[in-house]
Length: 323
Image 1 (cartoon, one colour):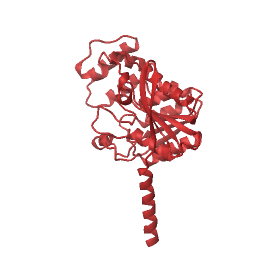
Image 2 (image 1 turned 90 degrees about the vertical axis):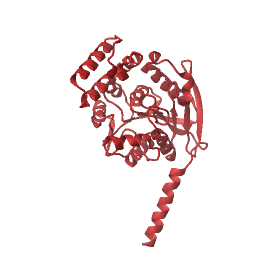
Image 3 (image 1 turned 180 degrees about the vertical axis):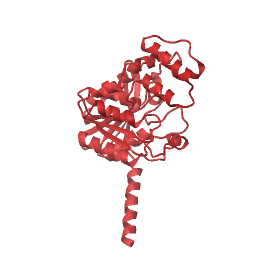
Image 4 (image 1 turned 60 degrees about the vertical axis):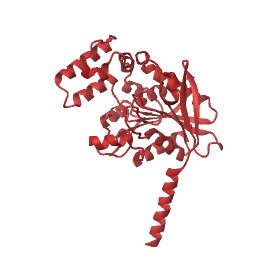
């Protein structure tokens, strides 16, 4: 019994040491189409000994920063920072960056009506180019979370990328995704579904809509419509089908924003992709039930660790194809 206690204490100290590790980070500034963007490279402790594999981490939609935190929510979850730390523990460097107008990229702010989805793709491409040209790195992987999954698919069609992980990535175009969410809400009456469908129909035809009901303004405000129209052009099923590199598609069973069916559709679109459905993992990659209050609370709790099965899966994938 005493031997078991000693062993358990040793394992506890080992795990505590791993989570307490401080990894070196460098702030990096680049130029993308005349805009200065900022990001952070996290290195494992072996960074000066050899060329390292590196993963470009691309965050989800909205005002989400390089760490995976949304300015629209109180508190932080730090999901993408934790992902970077996880990779560093496994000897893999990473680069995560702030979007135009936020954090290290705040000087690159644009008027909402001028911003397009292609701007985000171009910015991510600029970061990929930076990693390709940096002689400290060898093989490059991409991990795209939520909206970042689609951006990652676009970038992963380039020969410089060795592996791609889609994390909680939608499988439908953004208009189809939003319509599915509107229909799934039992509190939305039929007229809202009909009105939303009609607005999307006009936008698909290249027409903006000036008269939007107040209850749909958050989705269809005129200033966001150009961005939505540029985003609607891209179908994740078509984009992932183009990839000829190793692919990992990860979904959580308690994700309230992206469904397991999304991941399954992505895997069907590219049968070479590995599908991993993780029971009890939500959209910010943490353990939670599907109960709304508990689930949403994890979006603002940086102390919650990443799901252990997710950690093992992502580590295994990038170790296999990048190291």
